[in-house]
Every structure is written in C-alpha cells, then in structure tokens.
Amino acid sequence: MIKPLIIWPATTLLGLFLCGLALGSLDTNYFGPFGLTLSAISSIATICIAARGVTEALEARKRWTEPEEDEPTEPMNFRSNVTPSGDRLKDLEAKLNELTARYRDLASHVEARFDMSLAVAMDAHERITAHEDLTLPELLAKHAGPVIAVATCSLAGTVAAFAPVLLHQSFQSLLLHAGALAKAVLG
Image (cartoon, rainbow, N blue to C red; front, side):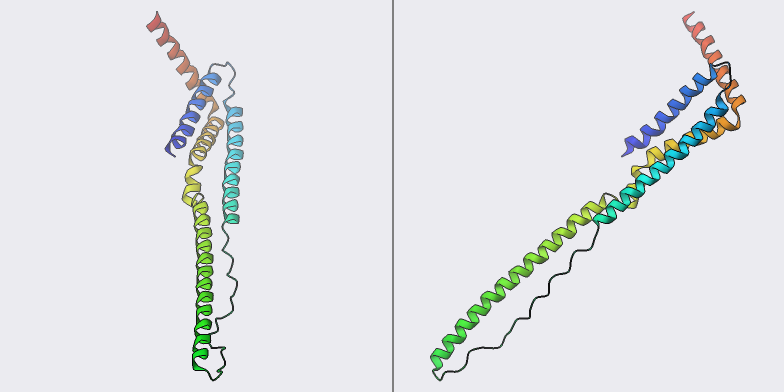
C-alpha cells in the first residue's frame, strides 16, 4: 500500500521537473499556457478519481444486503394423538412409538434449523469479508497516491500560470548553470 503512495507523487515531481527543464530550454515562454493546461487536466483527473471511488463504494453497497428472513416453520405439537384403547400395554407401546416418531421429527427439525442458521452465518461472513475491502479508510488510502499526484500537478499548474516569467527565467538559469558545471567537470 505504501508503494503507490510514494511512486505516484515521486513520478509526478520528476515529470514536472523534466517538463520545466524542457520548457525552460525554449526561447519562447510557454509556462503560462502549460500551467493552465496542467491545472485543467488535474481538475478532470481529480473528478475521475472521485467518481471511481464513488463507483467502487456503490458496488460494495449493492453487494452488502441483509440476509433473507427465515421461512416460518409450523409449531411443534406436543399433545398425544393416541386414543386409549383399554389395553394399557398397547396404549404404552403406541405412545412410545409416537414419542419416537416425534423425537425423530424434532431431531430433523433441529438439524434443519442448524443447517439454515449455519448457511445464514456463512453468507453473512462472506458479505462482511467482501465489504471489508471497501471500507472508507481503505477507499481513501487506495486513491491517496493518485490524489496527491493530481493535487501536486494542480498546484504546479497554478504556480506556472501565476508566475510564468519567473519560472522560465529560473529554469533557463538552472540549465545555464548545469551546462557550465558539465563543461567544467568534463572540460
């Protein structure tokens, strides 16, 4: 995450310096139009970066929906449906069979509810995990490098539009001194 934060501004500063050297080497001063163009392009880039961040946030919001409600189940009946027949052993056997059947039904009902709850929990976990990728700090950090680079370009463009003569003279002087230094070293 740190690399883009450093690479974008460093590349921008290097590019601006090289553009300044190129414009300073020309006889005609183009710093004014360059500054206005750079400011306009930087503004458009800022709008595009912001729109991209909003688009990513809206896509994350679409993925983040509440889990669906469980289907209501019918309540369990705990009353005996066995009618007394007069034979106590037969009645006990019928009640025992009924209780065994109800136990199986209850066990399958509990298992089905557990499976349903587990599926809802897994779905919620997947949604949260997908949503963690686009929290606000992550979204801001993701676009921090380009935003810093674009803001730097915008400031440089404003300075170039505000003081084109001073910039032209400064870069011409820098090139002159660099040329003299190169002659003295290689000389």
